[in-house]
Amino acid sequence: MRIAYSVLVFREGDAHVAYAPQLDVSSCGSSAEEAERMLQEAMGLFLEEAHRMGTLDDILAEAGYSSAQAGELRAPELVATSEATVEVPG
Image (cartoon, rainbow, N blue to C red; front, top):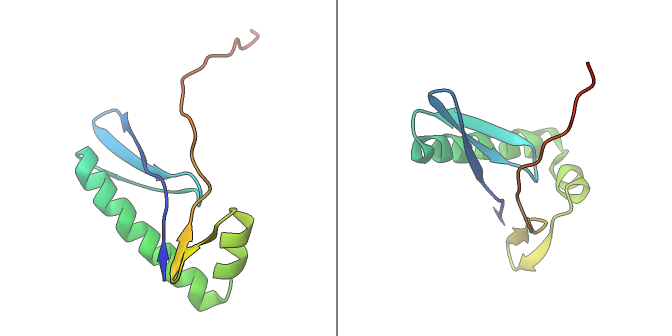
């Protein structure tokens, strides 16, 4: 089975962080490419462990995944990213 997911990459100091928002999994690396490779590994381990524990179907359903085609699940569509600010009292 193949499971699709979105990847957001941002900088945190000298590190790059790759984040899969649909399943709330992240990883980091010294470059964007390394962070994405590490995220793919982290996603594989996370999904493998969820399958082993018998919770994979529940996790995917709660995250809003749906069948795309035989053997593939589609992630909920990421439609926008933006930056915003909020005033903090004090």
